[in-house]
Image 1: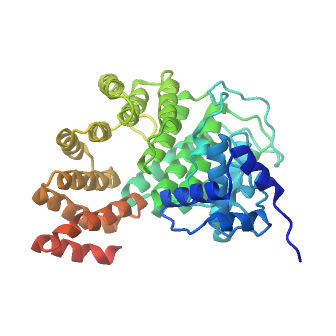
Image 2: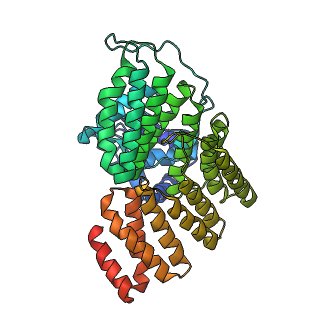
Image 3: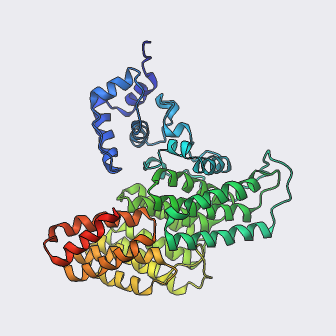
Amino acid sequence: MPRTHNTRLQALLQSADWGPSQLARALRAVAAEQGLAVAYDHTTVRRWLAGTRPRPPAPALLLECLSRQLGRPITAHEAGLTDAPTAVVNSSWQAEPVHKLTQLTRAELDPAHATLFGARGFSLATLALPDWITPVGRLAHRLGTGPEAPSPGPAEVDRIRGMTDLFHSAAEAYGGQATRSALAAYLAHNVTPLLHARVRFHRDLLSATAQLTLLLANMCVDSGHDRTAQYYHQVAARLAADAGDAATLAITLRAMATHAYDLGYHSTAVLNLADQAAVQALRAAPAVQAYTQAHLAVVQAHHDRHAALSALARAESLFSRADAAPGPFTAYPPGSLHYQRAQTLTALGDPAGAIRALATSLRLRTPVEHRATILTRARLAETHLGLGHLDQALTHWQEFLTSYPTIHSARAARHLHSLLAQLRPYQRHPQVAALLAEAKPLI
């Protein structure tokens, strides 16, 4: 049967002031960012315009390219791509968060549907925050359509917060990839039914759910499922804003900026996100303020040296005044502060200072920070090697390799690939050769 010309895609290209060649070039660039090798050219785009349906990963890449160029999220319907991931999950900030959370967690437990999310893509377009994402406490009489249920009280909220601590500890001990499915199941079966029940929503319940959702988002990051993590980040931010919880909103925005930064994005959009996190934290405790200012310093280092050092000084001053109870959303570990200091100094071109900060970070890591310790050691090894300190680098790489099998983490896996790439020029060195031989079976 004859194909129908994709007039909606054609209209978007005209709005973007792009021809087939420019779109193909943008597609290749975004694919390269995500580690994908594609061969799209102007003839590929012309076939899509003529009605040929793009095959994965093209739909997700296409929507991301158009969203970046037009400065707003582009849906699959707008582009005439009914099988694109955004046809399954609404990537708009306007999407109702409880429905979105229910949809996401149920699909997490069904591998056949989880693949439709475009889980490994990352969208810069969703980093732009709407003006209304502020903790104004927009709690109306939100009524679900579920059965009558008793109003969630302190016991239910305390239970959720207790489970948050347990899942956080498990992720730190074993990596997010090892604990993600269990957390998704807990949210799907034990938490979202409370949100759907025909009861008046309580701020504490929304706040606790926001924190649990943020933890799941971070587990997705640690699993290498970047697009799914962004969906959960959006939900966590919406729930925190609806709860009037400035601290959790600030921590969520900071997590979003960190996610983008760790993937190599240092643009103004990421800087604005880090800055918004710091602004929201002004209504939170000093530990949360220090947490957001430290990462603001990291991103600022790519834009303004003076602003970066000022933000770092503020973070350290706030940290000295912090007196928070232990917990993933109340305390800011000193080892993490020094790790962010090292990231800032690295971006400012001071690797020697970064090594000192990383060494301090490593010394201050506690036994419960198992994953963080492994990642810090890997960063220390990479920085030493960058300065030509082969012996020191090998010491830390060996410790990293010894611990690597104990966690399941995409971030740790990236460091393992970095180990192979960085040490290959030294492979004639006996100790390097032995280390490479030990590392290769782990890939």
